[in-house]
Image: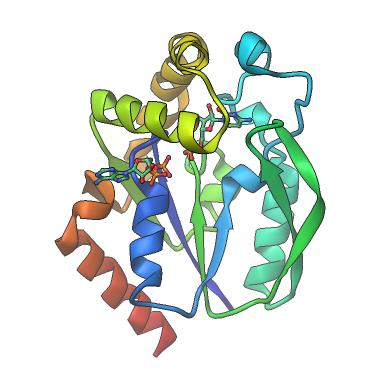
Length: 201
Ligand SMILES: Nc1ncnc2c1ncn2[C@@H]1O[C@H](COP(=O)(O)OP(=O)(O)O)[C@@H](O)[C@H]1O
Ligand SMILES: Nc1ccn([C@@H]2O[C@H](COP(=O)(O)O)[C@@H](O)[C@H]2O)c(=O)n1
């Protein structure tokens, strides 16, 4: 049965960066970003960015994520959805994901939902100060997600920050390991890599 490592933490905490650094050392894992399970909200744009709350558990198709994680655990292939952050919608195409011994699941809302929690073998919370996370998000969302400065600020104040304190920060209690500052934490990376190598051996 496949083992699942769950990496959560606030937006901009460095979750994706940790996974990228792990992949430079450990190649043989399946990567499942929770973001791919966002529900479509194509009526959203930079001028009405808070018309859909992307920082609420209901923003995700959790039924599909739980179903597909269950299949991967049992060693079955899935058709993973793909998400477009610029158009706020699920893409037409899916990606075939082959099962393996190790799955890394990454996303902001993993530990809030008991059905997801129960499927995770090792729970990691990436803990990065709010100001750093906001600065990283501002830069990334403008460069990669088609956003404007004012849309990032409006969204942060209206939904991202409240959602962080209501759903994400309290879920830290479920973590097995808390990693300060994400991808630059070399010792945490070493611990994670050796845990994964143990599963793959
Ligand atoms: N230690 C770091 N120093 C500087 N920039 C970073 C660092 N970690 C991540 N970033 C940048 O911050 C942005 C958000 O990081 P990312 O890993 O995507 O966070 P998350 O997946 O938690 O939202 C990205 O543009 C990334 O390149
Ligand atoms: N269309 C969307 C969908 C999600 N978001 C934001 O993404 C954040 C989660 O992704 P991270 O890579 O930052 O962890 C979340 O805080 C949503 O607000 C968005 O802006 N637009």
